[in-house]
Image (cartoon, rainbow, N blue to C red; front, side, top):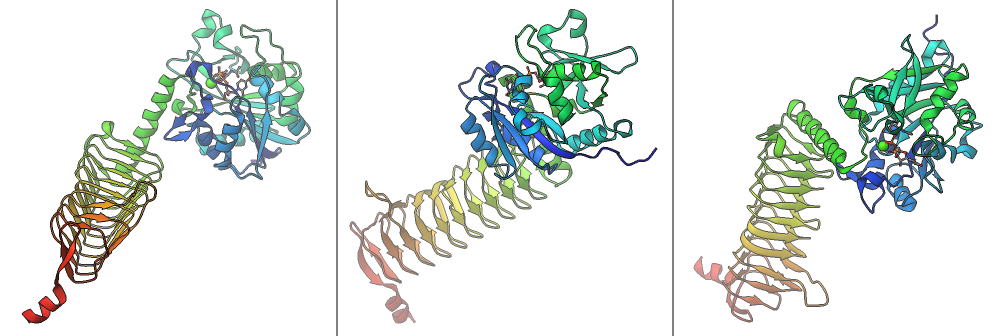
Length: 473
Ligand code: UD1
Ligand code: CA
């Protein structure tokens, strides 16, 4: 027999995502609930896209517009086709709502559930391959199954005496005997598209839920003499569905554990207490970085080599360079920290702030939309907002950029080698030139030229430091 499949049809994907998900007890449609900070449906879409199908059909219903928006952040508009299921009459009815697009197609249809987010593209590719190769001619249907310790809630796979597929029984329709079966239907299948729609016409809703079950299609195909195959997969986590919040939390934990073990084993990151760290699967951390207990790293954060991240810190969608020390209880959002910087304890960086290399934002310092130049330091109790600060400048304890006049925000610009005295109020818009000094407690209401010393309320020029250096030399 030839190794080559005789049936290598083009691939389309259909994702079921119209249900509300009653068991979530939520106002929000289930597929919009987040795993690793991304909607469940996005995870499924990403896996589907990796197979490069012709089209990805998404069945929408509950909060359809929001689901559509989420899907389009993951899939190209040209590749996505949205199908509305008006009433949620069951998974069979959901597939049926795409009939007009699909029933004539000579293709393979991979059916996915919007609430089974951990599925990997490699597994789907293997499923499709086995479906095409089945007995050298391809199967009419191939069902992805796994064995679960606790199969409660899932459809069970019934096999005949020879071990071949017989039918799927839903939990709610199962006899006590069937409930003992621990091989379950993942809700992921490959179909010969035309055969699927032919059989779907014969699905009835005579079951305990009064729904049209997609799970009746495989046995209808089998009864019609078609080949129904089973693709048994060893990793049960991949196909765990999210039906309630406890399952959602389980998957979050599993995904987190996977992410952290990959970072430890493949990337050389030390976690002092892996169980108490929460790291997004999208994040990257460099080698020899040490992560202390109780930290959260979210979104597409990138952290360099040899950093230390102390307890209580959250970093979201930010870039951290190499050799950075982030002390306890910092919040860093949408910001950039250069090589060898020091942050915290209790620092807050946000709004595209940028710390250039070897700079420091210390105890209780907040930077909003602010650039802190190379080697500059704000060590204690400051708010620096809408500001640019040059190189090797020192911002004294308690300095505030008063950027808001009650109506609008204004900018503060501070040059290189400046010494801002403790408790200086900088009334923006205002500029302090290179080499200038402000006295402790100054309220700076006007621009300060380079190399002037100002002090007082409001701050007045006390000395020209340039002349000072001249006379001194
Ligand atoms: C389904 C399977 C079950 C399988 C399990 C795997 C059926 C009848 N049962 O059960 O055998 O073990 O998945 O996770 O298919 N949906 C619609 N329209 C509807 C109903 C559902 O689009 O009218 C969507 C849902 O949004 C969801 C998916 O289909 O994304 C699965 O529906 P759900 O109600 O969660 O099915 P299960 O009870 O989990
Ligand atoms: Ca489900």
